[in-house]
Image 1 (cartoon, rainbow, N blue to C red):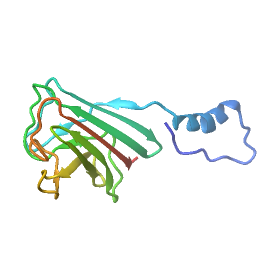
Image 2: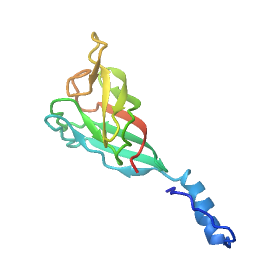
Image 3: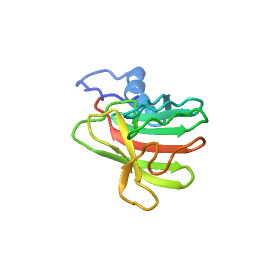
Length: 163
């Protein structure tokens, strides 16, 4: 993972170890593998994943983080009530709002947005409220349609972390 660059001092002897740490290792972090994490899934009345799956992965370079969440509902998944929120691996920087993309494949396929305000460690997905109401609504058990087993949500957001 990248870190703040070193301040070099006049007359300092540069060693292979220093070059590796300051240049090679920083450069290699750009090509690191994604790291998995388990996102939280909350609402007014919390849902439960049951035998479904909820996975997350992220790639962080410096303070830039790209996070991806995938939810696949199972036959014992319960959907709770209220708008859904999904946890991220790091809190976002304050003062900036972030947008990403979301796709829900249910009885219909829905394209939406991921929305997160600065200073948070969770995001919401918005989709058209229904097939007849194109206003934006936060994803819930019944919006944009009634969720059920085998429905899949994929969401991605890129944001600046607080540290």
